Length: 579
Image (cartoon, rainbow, N blue to C red; front, side, top):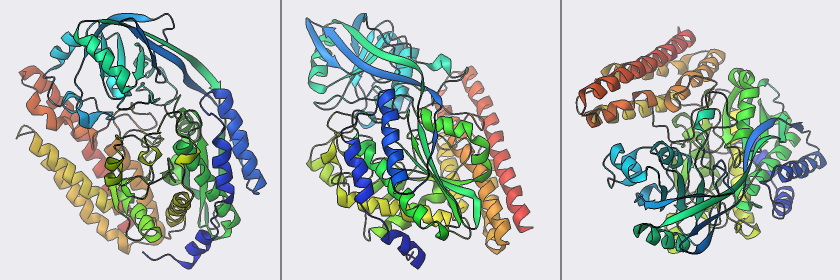
């Protein structure tokens, strides 16, 4: 779509002066220790105030796990390691026999707990893997992520060594708990030590495992509740000030984290400056927020905000836009753009209008990033930003990582100033600004729920086929088709009623597509399949035991009821606007 005169006025105001000064400031300021995180928040707030932008500073106590050091001793060697946040801290060490598991190379950074996905058929059953893992320290290729850690613990492993793909060791996290824990979450806190080592050292350890060797893992982490700063800027809209778009990103990072996420923090800073200076041109309000606890708290900052302001978000937030790793060197492609189906066109249109001819592909967002608002039901887009073209990544022999525009400096000490690219950052800032404006200023909320219905229909058909006749999802298909047909009538509805319906549909259809937990709770930090309460249909052929298949069918019945009830509720919303 063409850029309007109003949009162009905003875009023409974008400059690198203020945001680049923040990139430079953060490039010498480590931001993972709690005290350094708060110090960097003050740097950010000072730049906002100097630009004339008012900022509110929240200071909640959130639960963090701050990693300091780790090592692996084996075969007469002591090997440098890094503990992911939330690893069990064992400064005195834990010793056990080393055993290997062969990871599926395509799942090295997967958060999936499915055995077939993780091991690519090399492991045939849970009983088999328990016999291998039980009582031992597991060493395997990949990253020490939450899904894998939780499985190794369930299978009786006493430790995990993740062999990273290259010569550097990457920081990460290994807990499935999303944000600060509540009473129901706490039992999922990792009870085993986890470390990451680089590939050359990992190969030595894997050779030792092949000969039945032992290893001792040592980890040193600090855990507890820490007061952390959350800067929030609210820019009032001139027509519907109570409604708002939430644009956000994390400002804590590993070491100085320039590409992940100083460039994102700078993008939000420039958006705040431009939007504040031109606020008379905003229909709805825009809130910009910078999160702590992304890395050491598993999204604890954004989760606190989602919890603390849950009712305001539920009543008034029209969409959330995540800003992570924009403006990195060589990141000129948009083939890994994350967006919900109903908002994908907003992201793609903005990219296309700023970068004509760009390679664009939108994908379903994983259960990651600061997507802490799915259970409330917010339309969402963006997570990671521009990225390196795949051909260039392969040419550089870079393995796949989860940020920094595909630079393998991600989550290492090498994520320094040279990772940022001024020209690419300027482009990405304009993409974020334009897409924000197109939600904030649209007379009719720009969410395509027909596209969501199409996604539902494709998912249902996939599960139906995979069930090999053991499930009957025809009622789900028919209900979705009827909802999609009724959505066409919204185009003729009164604008106010239409907006109410488009807004309320999000609170129904987003949770049923992305969550298992009830609204206002947070799902664990591992992969959630589409329409998760129907997903068991695809697994029915794997239940060869008659009793377990019957149990799975009970689960499917309950999941089907949840889905059909949601579609029925959505249909009532549409009828209320069109009848």
